[in-house]
Length: 369
Figure 1 (cartoon, one colour):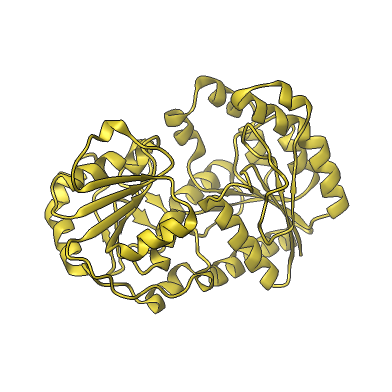
Figure 2: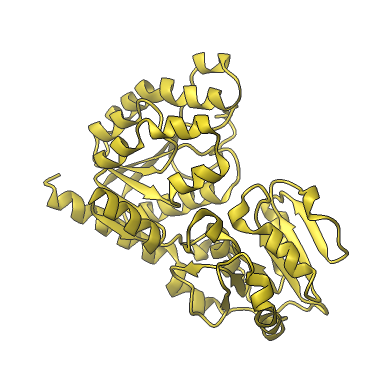
């Protein structure tokens, strides 16, 4: 099949989402399909020349949008780029469009009207917007997202919770496929660390309250271990403590080096703040690639119930309630690694992408496309 993957991420910026795009599309190519990524970047600046991904791609900008500033510039770029995107799609003539969910903007529906489109949802978008977006953003999204979803051919959610929500609301074919990871792209890092004190890492952002960075800091106040926070911003509100280290954003090689020194990794600790209880974060899959045991406060679609995962309560007081369980888990896994063979059947993309494309093909066949 010929697949058009539409996204609004910046393909020039190294990120977990960009890595996911590359891994997904790379596996589709391995299965014999043709893929092109069409990107309308949700950024103020667009740099086309420095994109270094191994997947065919087209990036869309618009000169008129340059007269606007801030976030409105990216919004206008998307609207004004739609005619160019449609021309490129006509030239490519895809069998279907795979759309990563994004904030609605006028013109996006024209793509769904022209091609059978499947939308991937990584969160309950409307609930998340209530927490982190302005009234203006919520208003813009509210103008057309209902029509957008009604025009989709089907939904792929990264959790059962997300999938059930959109299936029930729009009565469309839907499937839950947790975020995966291309483990073949990462060498087996299951060598034991040699730390006198346990080392814990959390890749997250203080600006996203559902990640629970504040709870990670709370753990550092109660446990004899070193805690490492990696993220795009440094938070002054967390205070200063001898065993709490804020690294800011790290390039991949530096993050790799840090992972190799860690004993335990920590996933989101406060999903209840955006009324969710299930997730499959990319960062947690990356932890698994390094053989790191994991502490999290939600149901992971693929990983919950595994010996190397400690799932604590998804509540505001979870650290206080589970402090002894956390200490016991850290002691158990200090200077140990999770064997790669235990992880492959749970998260490897080679399994997940075959399921994804089989679902899409079945829907297209049943609709006479």
